[in-house]
Picture: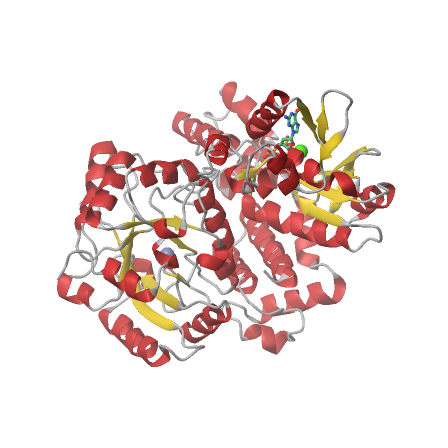
Amino acid sequence: MVRPNEEVEALLQEYADLIAITGGDPFKARAYEKAARAIGGRPTDVSHLDTAGLKEIPGVGRSIAEKVVEYFRTGKISVVEERRARIPAGVRQLITIPTLGPKKALVLYEDLHISSVGELADAIGAEKLRDLKGFGEKTEENILHGIALMRRAGGRIPLGTAMESAEDIVAGLSRITGCEDCAYAGSLRRMKETVGDIDILVAAARSAPFMDALTELPSTSEVIARGEKKTSVRTVLGVQVDLRVVRPDAWGAGLQYFTGSKGHNIRTRTIAVHLGLKLSEYGLFETDGGKRVASRTEDEVYARLGLPWIPPTLREDRGEIEAGLRGELPEVVTEADIRGDLHTHTDLTDGLASLEDMVAAAAGRGYAYYAVTDHAPDLYMQRMTDEKVLAQRERVRSLDGGQHGMRLLHGTELNIGPEGDVDWPDEFLRGFDIRVASVHSHFNLGRKAMTRRIVRACENPYVNVIGHPTTRLIGKRPGLDADLDEVFAACARTGTALEINAQPDRLDLGDEDILRARDHGAKFAVDTDAHSIPQLACLRYGVGTAQRGWLTPDDVINTWPLRRLRRFLRKDRD
Ligand code: DGT
Ligand code: CA
Ligand code: CA
Ligand code: ZN
């Protein structure tokens, strides 16, 4: 991601929220939101552009362009500052509740002086909302449901957000003299879908320079605790960061300990005890006499316990210790194994970049093949037509094999209707090389109907991949109510792959569902669903999730050579 673009995206999005909260013009709010997304999705730094250059970005008019220029010249946008001053931060936090819009948030603030999520929950408990104009018992219920959804994420941060902060911090600390090693550990290194706090580890002889540096980073807003071995801060995004400095000769033991999980560590410590050893963050020691037997690398520590090195994504005490002891640890899929992305969009529908630009960026990632899968007509707001998609096919064919010899597949993302039907008749579907099918509507059908619906989609001889199978949005929307075991069995039986959507707010399927689906013998596609060039890089989160589901390259169709993939895509149609 390009940092200046992201800063502008966040500011313009905030401005859109502020307009909405203060009861401003909804069209204006939407315009800023759109421009925010467009700028955030640009692959190249916008900070060098002048007003004219900025105006070439779709959705960016003169007034927005001028605000962006102002930001890069002065470090702020004055109208944003003005609106901010009128609204307390707590009120802005209210609209992050998924079921509460800005208008209602404003009423709550003005009439009941509610300015935090906690105060709001209390007011609902005291039945104070139902008497407000435009509110009722049903509204109270809806908002409570929204707060519950938000809390279910437990104040935890999405993997993608944590990763970007952590990589910035690691880069910053690595530049300090005396740094022999620096890495993030904890749940982030295990690629858990949400992260409680960020754990950073440094190997160095002296800790003070690193502790100082962390407290002085521009992203640090508050120092929680400053110590010799550990310092904790909070960043401007509200994320806690724990930094520990270890001696270089104890790097492996420290990394192993602070990567966790707790469950995994309990198992490794128990093995140590049975071997007459003691394992801590300082190393592996003989119980009698205290001689250190391993500590420099994780490899050494695991080896001395009779284990192979275990990938961090497997360290959840889900059988990895037993498998390691038996020498049967899976060779999990890695980013390098992925030969192509099979679910991506262009500006023909709701993507931000042109076909040519997406293809060039994909080729730049070294892919052997790449599928373009814009939305199909039943998603009305995307205005897809037969003519448009056929014209796109011509362009795809002319680009095929051009960039570094990368092969292109022309595909589409179909919409699974309430009865399990999809857009377009069979003759038309036949013309595509690959078809992803996803649920985009009718989320509350009831369990039986929902299960039947998705199973029917799998049984369609043209449907190759079920896109974001549960439709969950982490911390915002729970997954569909369906009998997933029945869906997974149908996928295995019909030769339909399950997507592991790599967008960090989706990660859909998630790790536990992947483990179940794998037991049914289903295959998977790790795809980004990229709507912009930077989003192609989200692949790593999908791969991490696939690893957490113990998948090997053989389980993942887009690691296969094109010939094998094409055979899979034919299903049983011949
Ligand atoms: P999180 O931050 O809630 O997403 O999860 P973690 O796994 O990052 O947990 P965290 O930050 O509390 O601690 C990082 C790692 O350090 C953890 O995975 C294992 C290790 N660790 C921390 N405290 C303890 C402890 O009391 N006992 C053991 N065995 N390990 C610990
Ligand atoms: Ca942590
Ligand atoms: Ca921690
Ligand atoms: Zn999509």
